[in-house]
Image 1 (cartoon, helix red, strand yellow):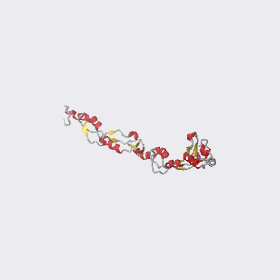
Image 2 (image 1 turned 120 degrees about the horizontal axis):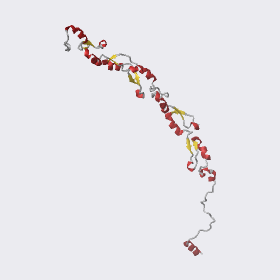
Image 3 (image 1 turned 30 degrees about the horizontal axis):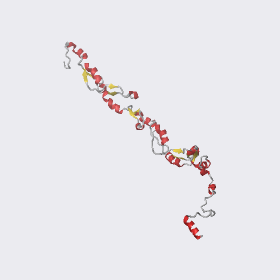
Image 4 (image 1 turned 180 degrees about the vertical axis):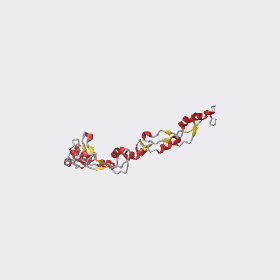
Length: 243
């Protein structure tokens, strides 16, 4: 009755009853793991299910953790476990993988999203996954003139290409007489040669300059053999009077 047992038994059976009594104080099954509590025999199972010192499944067992931990230390262990999943250090560049903390350094060295130096020296550090895209758009990427097929051999940084093409001697332009029917696309350096032979050029421009100079000029001198000028009435009267 001291521990709550109200069962009446014979005196000679007290010792044997105490061995099986539900109110017998016993140690927690996880005493070896640190639990100091002593509980009634009938409460052993319910206590064991909630005991803070009970072993719990490894939270990161699938990643390789084999450390046995008490329930009360599970969260603390999870925060420092070397097998815990952590985001990649290159997450800001696009990596979405969750990596085992133990292997984080190795992953970072081989991650396709790790930053690399631009090979053209622009100062930017694109990720390895974006390196091809950056190389195609880098302002310092060496680029040939777009009129290479027409004969231009110049190579320059990409950001200077537009200004070069405006003045490139090999740039392609329509004929000056396109509005008259010429469909030729000619290099700028060959434009004068084409204009001299274009069959759509202005006829006036095509005439030799000497033919214009040899054209007769309109005489401004008054012909002297036209005869007497026509006289007015007053002059005619004066002439009769003289006679």
